[in-house]
Amino acid sequence: MFRQLFNDFRLFVRDPQQIVDGPQDRPFRTWLTVLIADLAITTVVIIPLIFLIDEHVLHLRPDPEITRPMTFWLMVTLFVGVAPVMEELFFRYPLKFARNRILKVAVYISSVVFGLYHLPNYANQEVLFYALAPIIVGSQLLGGFLLAYLRLKYGLRWAILLHAVFNALFTIPSALLFHGKTVIDYQSSDYSLVVTEYAYLERPERMRISRKDNGIDTLIVRQTGLQVVLDSIGNPNTHYIENVLVDIDFKAAAPIPLDSLIDRLGQEYRITPQVTETPGH
Image (tube, rainbow, N blue to C red; front, side, top):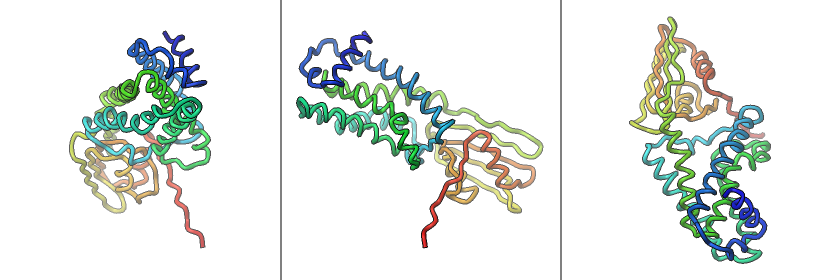
């Protein structure tokens, strides 16, 4: 089954027109094989490579707008419903109007642009980031070709279905698994700090900060992005931290310096200074 898909897909990459003109049998079996292959390559090859880049080469910073908190059902609607339909209509639907050599060019352009379309998911602007882009958006690049293959072989609905199921299998289990996870539970005679992460919104955000003597003695946060918290307790836009949705319960016996609290958060989260450009004279 996978060998046949590999040979068929290799032929498609060389000449998409042969797939359009070829036999159209057993669409579900081919669709399922493509889904399994896509999931396997993404989880076994691409995600570990991205992890290695993030840990040892370049810190990847998700764009805060992409990680903006939302409710569970809004997240499912956007990622599993709206995005697959809209993106397939934009990137794959026009392929039906191309033929022969133009079709091959159209497949390559649509697949590469589909991958690059996901680069703004990150806030990075370094030259190295763009040099590593083929790996960072490798899942989308691979997906672009696989979706084009299904779209031309069986029709747009099979591409939409693959896109939706792929997003669902990554979005829903991870959201349910990591929702409500306590990542810091520190208790001492000086202060207590409990941080709980959430994958989606359950209630309105709320934050209460108590400062005394140039220090902080109370911080109560509910359902708020961690970047928003960091900007609120310190100077805005001076540090970058992943905008994870959190509850925070911090209470100190006596006010502690802000840097001490940030350092304690930095033991669990990667906090990096934000570089700001100074205007020229």
